[in-house]
Image 1 (cartoon, rainbow, N blue to C red):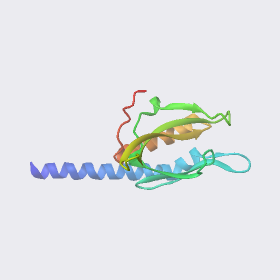
Image 2 (image 1 turned 180 degrees about the vertical axis):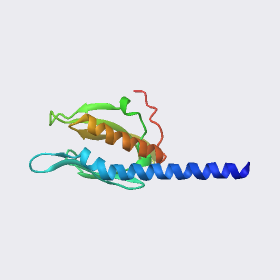
Image 3 (image 1 turned 30 degrees about the vertical axis):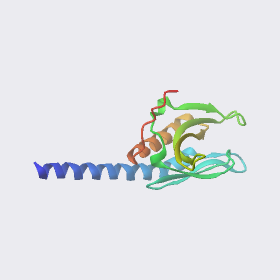
Image 4 (image 1 turned 120 degrees about the vertical axis):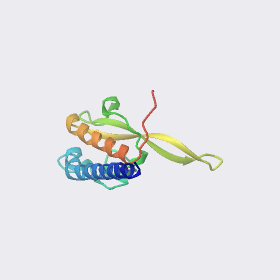
Length: 151
């Protein structure tokens, strides 16, 4: 009984590790090109890379163009329920809005959890959906909590 329990736990851990590794590989191999938004003179958005802890991206639509987010801080949500927002500066661009858990200090210097929006811009929803689904799966494998915000 004890031996079979250890075997099942080890097998589950190995499968989880392989799935996470495959998701990272897929995003770094395919997700970067599928997520890239370019115009004739520059790149406006692109995933730069994903490692076991974080996703790094370039977003020229934001003030701070190079950013990273820890995978476990993304609030997991089925892609079909993600909000989509238009980009007012560029009519061709829409954004998936993912929720991310961040921390800030309040007036008493106490750490508080804050939920912020992470915009994932796209021109082609079918390509972006594949990448965002992979990001959500990877976030869940990294210990991300489910987004339980209703509104």
